[in-house]
Image (tube, rainbow, N blue to C red; front, top):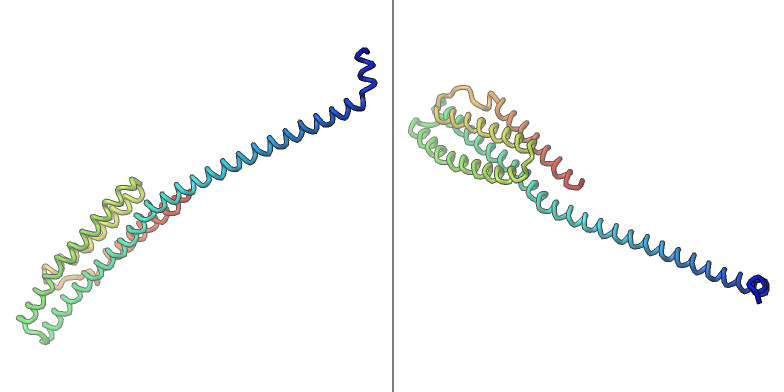
Length: 205
């Protein structure tokens, strides 16, 4: 039996066999492509999970430091407020002495008491600013560094003006009447807070 005769006599069987074979190949290809797609999706999910873990770790570490810095800004402003209250007490003593409500001896005693409070307030300010300084420089970001320097300088200028007035006891123009320095402190604090918030937001990028 030649090949032509064989094919002619078994064409139906061969067609059926070919259909089965082709169906198997198609099924195999579909299964293969589906498995590849699922593998890629699983790898994509794993990569996304790893990325999310890295983001969360970065947020936890850096974000925690940023929140500490933002809290520290509020602490510094409260310290400066305490210094301003102390200054107001000096003014109050001067006025009470001027109106005869306090004798010079009584006024002096009260001022000495206030004098003893100022160093602790100044030390507290420096402690907080130094702690902020260590955290700030760990970011190595120019905008944050520059804004912190401006904030620290504004705080020191304002505190220095308070000390100058209190030490002189001269009754000259007070920081309360000339509030340019405290405005600069508020502006510098706002810029630093904005830079820190921007950094916090960027951690998700």
